Image 1 (spheres, rainbow, N blue to C red):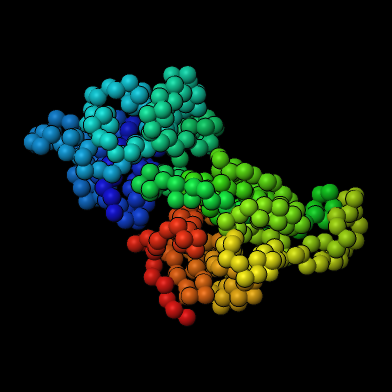
Image 2 (cartoon, helix red, strand yellow):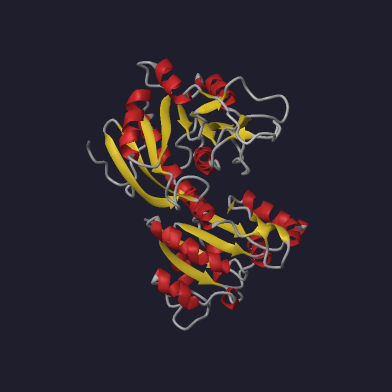
Length: 411
């Protein structure tokens, strides 16, 4: 699809750059790697040569490299430049126009979009010099993928670790995509579980982490939508730019969704809403552990998606998307739900799989519509979010199917 230059600089996160290459290739892109001298202290060029099937550029003055002024030729050919990991040193060079190696020279020569992915010690990342340099790059239109939090190579715990490859790939996809195909649209997205309280300490819940719904919300924000994110109790941060409504129970989620449905172009119910809640509500005091058995009576919650389908009637707005998390007869059950709940699209996935479903970074799904089904391979949830929103865009009349989407099969 696109030729992407990946600049690898000298940090322990250089090993993750290999995964970034793989992810870009899986998305259909061609990658050429550029390594600074210090990067080669962490990962060898032969590794990148083996997976890119291209010569790795390591020396601006290598014999033969200047026959066609290689950095100028590449600057014209690439459709994006990604620097991952980007050290404080390289960020400073890019911000101040210092071109003393192939990578920094390529940055000045190219007019392709640039994605910079910082990775360094926490104190370095928060130092005023680095903060100002990143601000300078952002002001020039450079896309910065902020580092994650966790254990760092120096032994500290804090912000500074290289962003996960899936985040970097999603950022590249955004800079390659024509911006704003959801501008002017309002999407209501639900994410996470609901907790049905038994007493002030205990609750009935499920294993949903909210990752899928958060990925959809982040993708929609990145494509220009106004996103109302109705978020159950999760430990993950919501995407910047979404309007977050935090809820705990199925009843609270229903209230929040209904309050915003009238203004929505689409409602995407990715949350794992509890099917049952405690009859009579939560006990005011903690239940004593004074008996061998405990009987709890549960009662059905209102099916939010089915209610939306009924209230919409014969109208085509909002577009309604549901998720069918199943452990057997996955597609068949999703088809039944599609009809019974009167929705436009069901995303069916087998949550019994270890690599898909709850609390993992990847998912495998089948898109179920009245016209047929589309099987999707195992992929990062952010990539699945892209495909789902492509379908929502098509239902809204605002996009076409991507070349890398599997063909639909008729029922």
